[in-house]
Length: 192
Image (cartoon, rainbow, N blue to C red):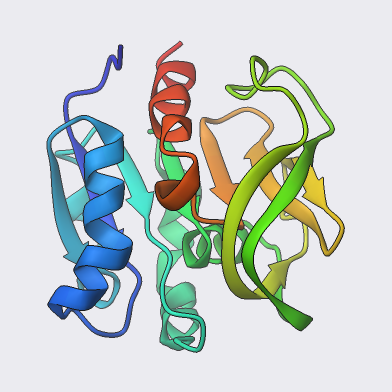
């Protein structure tokens, strides 16, 4: 059971139409299991985050790269003292805020593929590796400062990145599609 009572879900998509919400936002809200509010990335500021226990950055459409233009406005993430979870585009934003880089992949990763847990001591310890995940991304991150990667795949060495001392996690894939239980596991782990 989650020790948290509220989440701010950041819509990283360029558009805020119903299709975008149904595909990228609502599944995250349902999987979190705590009351949440949604804000568009371009409207997000540090002050907004104060009233929420957890911040979750969503993924977005494959060719929607507008979120990358907002990354320079998120340097305050490094000062935030609360759990942060990034899904796909959200992982990219976390990486950029903490000094990592984002670069295009040679071939987009689309569909179901296995990831391999390579480091224990996180919320995924009870899962048997490999784990099938759903991917929809065309970028990859370099490891940011004070982060480690705990899962990789054949085409992405940073499938899951975790901050070494803060409850901050980035998924390259979309757990809201195939691994909804990861959200509750993250919240439980972050609450300890």
